[in-house]
Structures are given as C-alpha cells and as structure tokens.
Image (cartoon, rainbow, N blue to C red; front, side, top):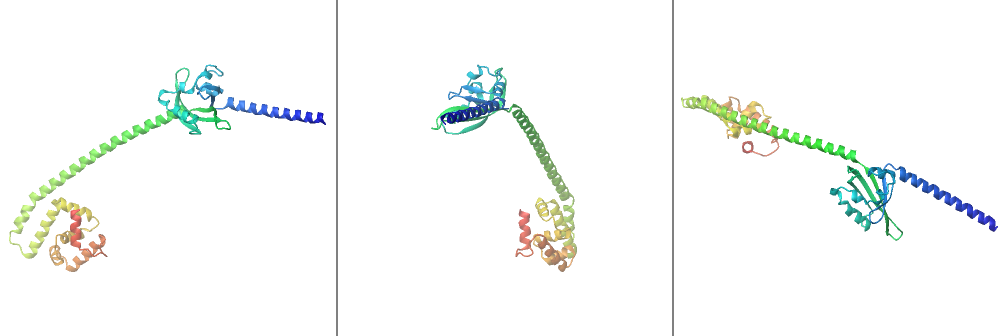
Length: 298
C-alpha cells in the first residue's frame, strides 16, 4: 500500500515537472520568437532579460552582455527623456501601465521611433518586483506620417496663397465695378439730366410733364447707389412691378403712378398686390411704402 502510494506520488510529480517544463518551453519560445522587443528590467531601470528582437532593435548581437547592462533611458533621444517621469509614476504605483511613442538610438548611433508599452509586475503585497517593456519599431509609420503632414502643410500653404490671390482679384474686380458705375452715373448725369431740366422748363402739358418727371426719376435711379441697393433687394419683381415699387417708395399715390406710367389705377392696384405677395407681405399689416423705404436704407 505504502509502496503504491509512493509510486503514485512519484508519477504525479513527474507529470507536474513535465507540464512545468512544457510551459517554460512555450514561454521561452514565445518570448524569443515574438515579432516585437520584450524586455524585463529591475527597479533601477537596468535590463535583466531581453529577447532576440529587442537586441536587434537596439543594434546589439543577440545575447550580448553589453546590452543587458543598459538602462533604456540611456538610449533615449534627449527630446524624449520626459518619459522617465512616466516610469517613476509606474514605479510609485500611481499608474498601472503606460504607452508612449518615443525615439531611441541604436548602438551605431542611428535614431529610430518606437511604440513603447511598459507595465510593472508586483508581488501579492503590491510591491514592485520588475518591469516589462514591449517595444515595436514604428519608424516607417512615423516617416509616412511626417511625409503626409508635410504634404498637408504644403497644400494648406498653396490654398492660402490661392485664397489670398482670389481675394486680391475680387477686390480688384469690385474696385473696377465701382469705378465703372461711377463713370456711367457721371456720364448719364452730365449728358441726360441737363436736357431733362430744359425739357421740364419748356412749358409741357400735365401728361407730358408727368412722363418727363418719370424719366427724370429713372435717371436718378440709374445714377444712385441708393437705388441700386434697392433693386438688388427686389430682384424677383418684373420690370413693371419694379417701376411701381420705386414710385410707391417715393410716396406717389396710385393715381399719380397710373398717370406717370400711363396705366389704369386698377393695373396699379394689381401690381401692388403682386409686389406685396413677392415680398411676403400679403398677410401682414405693413405699409408698402414704409417697407420699401426700409429696404432702401438696408
């Protein structure tokens, strides 16, 4: 009985040792063949164990004792030493792990970009035992990112230059338009208005005077920036409705408008209703004359 129990215990121990050996073999294979660098280090930051890939990343031959004497921050680019503060927070238990992108130097002095994930292994009492760092080379990705950022910056500068050129061109066109309007207004005023004044002073009959006054008003409309602003607000009106709207704005009665435009008062009333509808005033108690004046002032 005792012998059988001892045999069973020996068999169980052998099975346990075999399972442990297989587990350790799997761990070693995973550790050594991992496509990323894996480093174990002590609490001073010194490397104590590193896989083949991590040695390659830092430019050391696999198993080189010199690599195992390093602290990773000794290989860190000067602009990225701020990551040491992250390690101190990890060591103090303020954070459980961290991920950063930083630059390292290889043994030959070449610089490379890495994505670094660091975590701390602790005992049952929560005391830090050693750290684990997983390092992945992202140099190509960073180069592509920087190239893209350069392209974006270049394109942005080109668009800004084109936008500035467009603004200059539009300002120039606006100045040309204003100059042309001023020339047209000056020409119409000097060439037409004197003859209208002479015509009005020549003893016209009531109907003829009304027509001449209408022509004079039209000339004023052409030469007035005030009137051009009004026309742009009334762009949806027909030419006849626009004529009626201008006369209403000037305070003319329906009878006066009919006489000046040689149409019936019913026609004037019809045009006034159309104007109110197109301006959205059909159901509003707003005086049309006052409203058109307000458009002119805007």
